[in-house]
Image 1: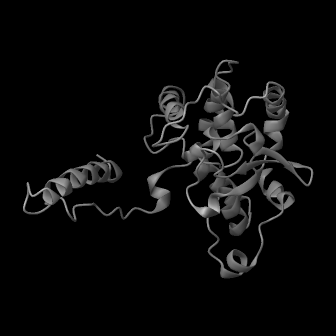
Image 2: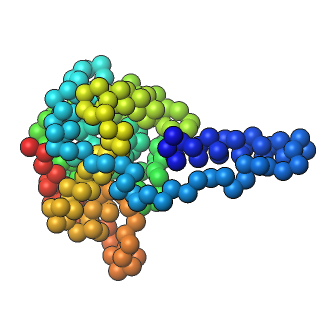
Image 3: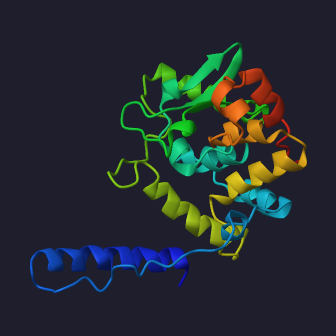
Length: 241
């Protein structure tokens, strides 16, 4: 069992025994302090997708008018680095144009949520997504007055709109892409980060695209957000052939 999974069970057990302790059923909570420390580096928890993995994903993704999210969400992830939750919860009006550049507006309006404050950002839409017809799909939804990009996804209090799609993608990933357990949907973010890093993109630019806090005081505290044109210059380096 992974450390993450073990800690989930310990956390639930701790909550149960904590309640028993407060009610006087137990004299103490024996689950206190049992959480396991994960000493692995971030790059050891998840792997990037290889070029072969990406090609298998692109070849096997279904194209259905009834479930357009299965075609678009993985592609958006590999060409933007957005988190699964961030893509699944997108509204039609979260696709905006800034200085002539189409972008995804990641925000916590309506029933949406963001992981941290720095997650609120605008990420340019990769030209590849536009050439594949994403803006045409977006226009069709506008004409139908649809509020959200993926109407087949339902909202849950615990995990927003991503639960159903996440379950489908896990099956798809193992069936058509890889049996490596460290390669999951989140691997798209690692792939984007690594691809941009190897292309020589500044760390602060990568951080803003991924919604991470800038480590540098100069760029993080005093510098304003990058213009969409600067981010787009980096985004176009995501080329999978």
